[in-house]
Image 1: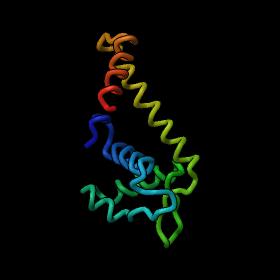
Image 2: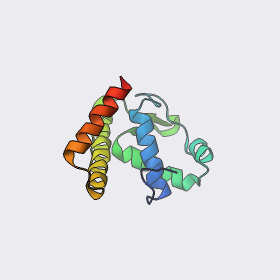
Image 3: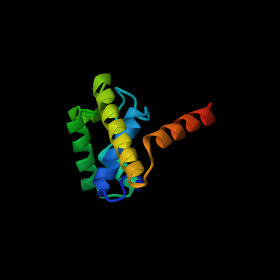
Image 4: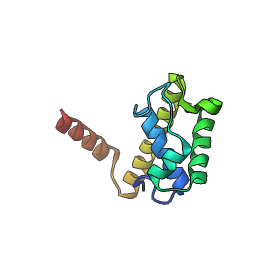
Amino acid sequence: MNDMMPHASVSQQLLHKYRLDIIGGKYPPGSQFPTVRALAYEESVNPNTMQKVLTLLEQDGLVISHGTKGRFVTEDTGVIAAIKLLLQTEYLRRAHEAALELGITKQQFMQFLEESEDNEA
């Protein structure tokens, strides 16, 4: 399901996916979030699993429940920015650990980043 988290549970992988979807703008601030049943159907998971994911998104502060009106993405861009920073830090830490395991030096890593940046331009 998620190449970045191969050993994570389904709910953790889905949490990661929806965090990325929110910080990436798929679900803009203030927009209504899909229902548990719609997401469960889309992801082919049990609604209880999806409920757990939505509860975790609420605990993050990314999604807010408005009772019978449904769930909405937070309008607090500070919360979204904080989760984005958390995910960026996590990705970079994993990349650093993998580089160390492969014997990649800081200089080699920086050279790779510079060359990648040049290729994107």
